[in-house]
Length: 215
Image (tube, rainbow, N blue to C red; front, side, top):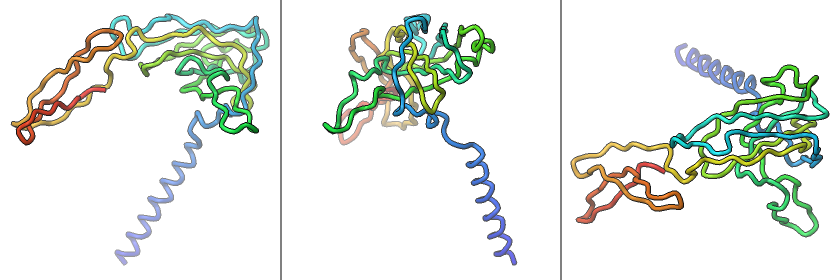
């Protein structure tokens, strides 16, 4: 009897987990048909991003404000965030001579509908958004799309924004040491200057090895 009760309880947990998985649906970015994207740039449409330089106080995350406008606004217009900033067709390699590469080479790393912060966007054609960006060691650009997520049409592209120091170490990692390990710093030179990265000095087989704790 106990075995039967255990099997029933296990089956209940499995069904509950499946129900939760089904209720969450697909990952939001998977809904974007970027492989179907077409280019329909409109000279009267625009996307402006500010500030253009992020992390002036050595922040690794910062908010960006977007102002955008479209002469043909729709309820399913959306804004995509791209990194690296250059995502046009010139960067798409043609793998097979008989198959043309997609017009857009990369999918957005995040998106939001154009009317999210501007309920009257469909009537006025103007809107704004605030998006938080994380230093990904590359620049960013923002694009306005029409046609919804399934058939996106590129309408306008913003100016590029970037972190002041894209190569700065982020996401520190901690490690537990023992008596044979001592905290140290490693100096790393890059285009932005000298950085000190935390590390552990490990004494192994009579030699000193430095293990970085930050990327």
